[in-house]
Length: 63
Image (cartoon, rainbow, N blue to C red; front, side, top):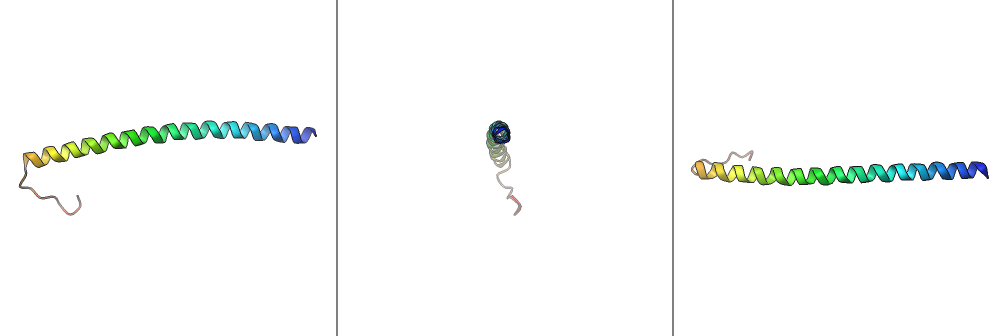
C-alpha cells in the first residue's frame, strides 16, 4: 500500500510539473505570435514605404 501511495505522489508531482511547463510554453508561444504579428505589420509598412518611394521598381521573384 505504501508503494502505491508513493507512486501516486510521484505521478501527482509529475503532473503538476508538466502543467507548469505547458503553461510556460503556452505563454512563450503566445508572446512569439504577438512578435511575429508585429514584425509582419512592420514589414508590410516598410514594403509600402519602399513602393511609394520607387513605384517603378518591380519586385524580384523571391519576394
